[in-house]
Image (cartoon, rainbow, N blue to C red; front, side, top):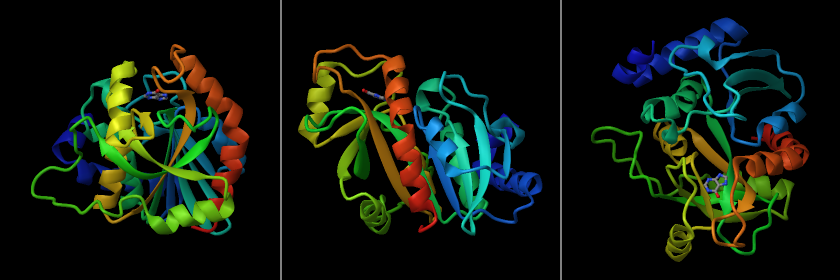
Length: 269
Ligand code: HPA
């Protein structure tokens, strides 16, 4: 099935959405949430899912390769909203190309989701940010040069990160600030010089996900919300070394706050 994903990405997303309907008995879903590194614990605050299964049960999904990236899909019905939750995602640095990276959000949109919420763990470039702080993504810098779109698909990205959704989240927690997210391919973290470059370019946050999914979801007409959790100061900001364990630990510590925020936002979306 992974071959089909590369030959016909949208067709495979339609097949995955059909299989999702079969597995959940729900003709459509309304909202999708992609839980990034360190966010998986936050999903436990959403309540009890009606269904949970490995992502590989749906056509086109790859098994996860990174600790902390679950490869599990859950379906919830929360206050009349059918929410599709991806625990984990595929990243560009896994070397499988762009299609598996955006297959989840394409499946979600084909399953009916009008809103896609993308969460991630990131390094804080902005010196005012603290570890454990969530930041709403206002805009991004795509530094990988990789787009999920092929052909003459000249999509406007002026309002990629929905103002309506950003305001909604801020009305739930007025301590939240907005920032610009820079997408770095990884898997190596950035050098201090690269972080200096990104700060100069206007980035506040840096991470290895979210941007291709945001573009793919928006191109299919979904409204996108991005929330980053600052899990570490970016390279060179404090002089401390970076580690995946530190990223996961910061995510774990913030899971309760993030989960509660998401559940409040989800039912109002
Ligand atoms: N850089 C890139 N990706 C990340 C970081 C970082 O500092 N922290 C968590 N994901």
